[in-house]
Image 1 (cartoon, rainbow, N blue to C red):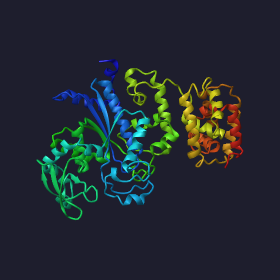
Image 2: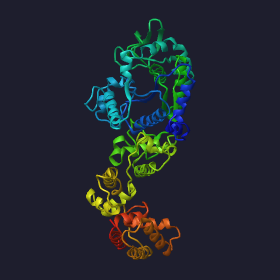
Image 3: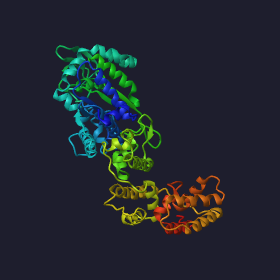
Image 4: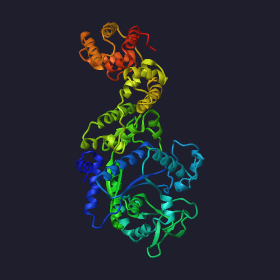
Length: 526
């Protein structure tokens, strides 16, 4: 094997651990597997949210790890469950009253409330595909409606019909008494209303490929199970899809653990082999509640990209998938700086270390060779100190701090400048609150001004930081965090920030002295 595949086989990065499941599957298969199929599922009952993107991004990372370890071709399917009946009208869309009349119909038959596409599902599918395309994901999009109606699922549907009672026997113990009495995996599409019906199934005929169900008015009605005239309840549908599409790998959220187990049992009943699975923790909103596409809580994909790079979002998806994480605006700056940290280390790492670096997954093994001289947190403080939304003003300071840096030579930094201005205006300005220092703090700030006046031009951030430390100690700050908290509250209207030495070096010693003088005199108080 190549050096990279050797390193991949022992890498501790979670995508490689997952990919090794597939390598083992290949090795233990009784018949050759010509292609490994990765699958992700999406329910277009609401606008695509960032969790949907996360599942595709993470699956792609596992696929990338697999491709580094094996010569077997792979493929990623992004599957939309757009034949599901619409159960409720989402809270975050227009023209909800219009949709209310279509409750129960397949999402692909519900009118588009935005008025731009053939149906609500087509609109949401288009949004998802547009974003995945913009990100450069390599995937094949499949629609449940098209798969059912085109006949792609016909053989699998007949197989489920032949094993109807066995599937019922698997699912029934998980249901309440009333539901257990009428359960069937088949959901006929009403020939009268067009709704997906959870109807009583009166008869099945495996040889003919038909069943008899009760229409909404109670009329016994016969229908084929093929051609999109029926669909399956989603746990049976999931199992059928694994078999029909030959899925070898699919991940899902922690809330679906029991469903994965049940669908895996159904898949075996109908003669399939369940895929390798990975359970990830759920994203939470600012209140610690699960994000939901129907409620529209938490961040959207576009929300994140308004304030930070796509790469920072991918890093957030890479990190600790087995741990629940808040997904709200205040985590964006940290994600950006962590991405920059990983990027800066990559070029100096051994191959085994590079394969554990998120930058390898984010940039498909070839991260850009750009060293970014400042953090996003520092940029935010520079914007605050300058009180400007003019990128040219900020680049004036950046060019002095990092000679030779320019928007042309440093495209990542140039993007960060624009993001920092936008983030500062939308999230920091409304919450910042400068305060006036007390007499003890004024004395300490006077001493800091004297210390900075003795610092030569071009001093390193570490040397400036040492002087700031010394002033804090000399003024009785036993816990230096309190000293830095004072500086940030007085000078920037915030309670925390990056190292003061770095901020002063970036903004300039002379300019920082003027800022401290204004803060000492209470001139920054809103």
